Amino acid sequence: MANQSRTDGAVLEKVDERTGEPDEYRVLLLNDDYTTMDFVVAVVVSVFHRSIPEATRIMLDVHRKGRGVVGTYPYDIAATKIGRVHELARENGFPLRCTMEKA
Ligand code: TYC
Image 1 (cartoon, rainbow, N blue to C red):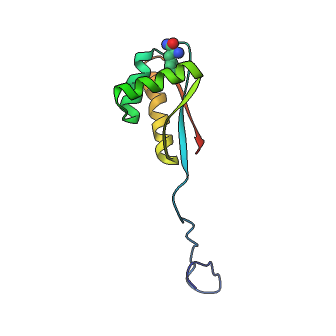
Image 2: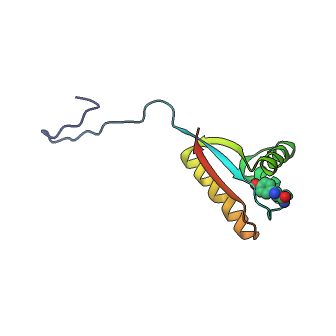
Image 3: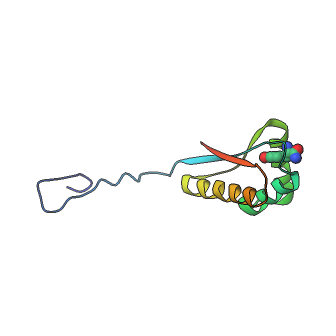
C-alpha cells in the first residue's frame, strides 16, 4: 500500500506530496527616496549575481516604476536573498526593501 497512510499496521507510511517542480517566487525590489543608486546596484550584483549593466538597468527600472523583479527562485532561496538584502541595508543605514510574490 505504497503512498497511502495506514493506521491498522505496525508501519505508518506518509504520503509524499513532493510532485513536480517547486513553486517559484518573483523577488521584487521596492523604490525609496533614500537608498543610493550605487548601493542598490552593488546589492543586486552581490546578492542576485547580475552583471553591473544588468543591475543598473534593474535599479533604474525600480527607481522609475516603484518596483521591479530582480529574479525568480524557489521559496527558500527567495527568502534567504530577501533576508540578505535587508541585512545589508540595515548594516549600511538604508531603508531598502525587498519582497516576493508567487510567480
Ligand atoms: N530612488 C533612489 C534614489 O533616487 C534609488 C533607488 C533605486 C532606491 C531602487 C531603491 O530599490 C531602489 N537614490
